[in-house]
Image (cartoon, rainbow, N blue to C red; front, side, top):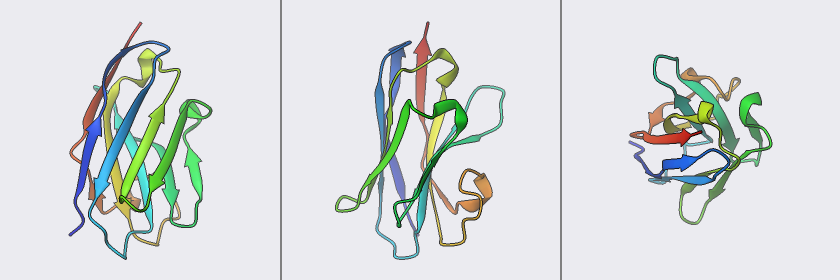
Amino acid sequence: QVQLVQSGGGSVQAGGSLRLSCDSTYDYSIYIMAWFRQALGKEREGVAATDSQGFTTYAEAVKGRFTISTDSAKNTLYLQMNSLKPEDTAMYYCAAGGPYCPFPLREGTYLYWGQGTQVTVSS
């Protein structure tokens, strides 16, 4: 069983930066990892994803502002968030999945989820 433990997040003013971290237990079956977010009253949406081949993809709303990365030595996934906007306010979740990942920003791709961490951006 893969365990994902998140840290980071918090409150920041618009234009500021935050970094989220997601520590995972190693599992050979994990091929892709991602960040999702869910704002109050809205559905969970994919933010960014990266796989073991170095492929990355981002939601249009965060392109150019957010960067997903991994530290394989530490089995840690990161999300660097710059130029934050109030509409980025949400609960953020990391996720991990296996090699079958035709839709990297869709929830159904992922088997394992972190506990969530709140990001609040004030105007």
